[in-house]
Length: 430
Image (cartoon, rainbow, N blue to C red; front, side, top):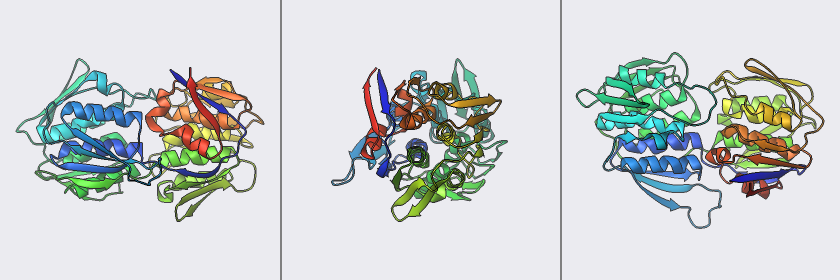
């Protein structure tokens, strides 16, 4: 077991390289199941979730070759990885693998589309709400899949071996369901229309890669997707989009310390709602040739009123980090969580550091305080873990953050990146 030690008080100054997006990398890796040719992915982040999904893909029969970085590249530039699913040797994704990471459940769609059968354990992952998979299963059923749930597994098959195109209307926006339906539709017979599809940049990145693989998709980046199914897809080469959540996280860390940092490769078009909120909070996020520069605009942080929304709204994956930042803002901030019903578990840990936060249903009221004081705290999920780091950067004394396995799922080399711009942070034995 390890813990993270954060000693607050240092300004962050310099440059942070933004890694490839975890939320894009995972569906792109799963897309390799749709072809028997090589899918080469560049800018792959080194994360626990990536390593876990590679184990699952290997179990299914995918050959994986990690080519590493090109000579002379920064140590924070992502790796190049080649995936070849020449033969699917097993269409079962077992509980002991899938239970550790929710996104691994998405293999259900490609396995059904290519092999006509799949048995996948119901998923695990962060405990931030029920996040049911009924939308995934209903979409696949509309495409002709016979689906049963038996002893904790989804058991699915396709009569005749090939999915059929369908008109799918999601009752609410779901990134995971959009990923699954989109991938399955690329090999289905006929046209599939997906309405109320998620528009997140990670969904766009997957769609763009599928097009490189030979898929025919119209409406990319909109809420309505038209997919003309193909009998087979071919290999391709694709670079994973920079991680907008990592960029937003480091932007708030910089703002918390009254620093100034260039977020290299960060993209403004994927963060427009976040940038607007930062402007309201008194933080300037400006676009430059190499990325986004972050600094406070006029001294003190200001309170904001925000509610999380599907893209292009403010991301739920930045809610915990914003709450940490607002603990030091002038005034009372209102943060409403509309995506997940249980994504406030970081509140009590922030309170341990001296934060003044009141919960009222789906809304947190955050009254800014003059000082935070370091204390032992516990990460409760992936994004909550890094909110504690942000708070610790401004706290007096030392903050001990435990249960780092949450952090390692989604943030590559966090302590090295922060140390390089001036943070006093280290990993130690717990």
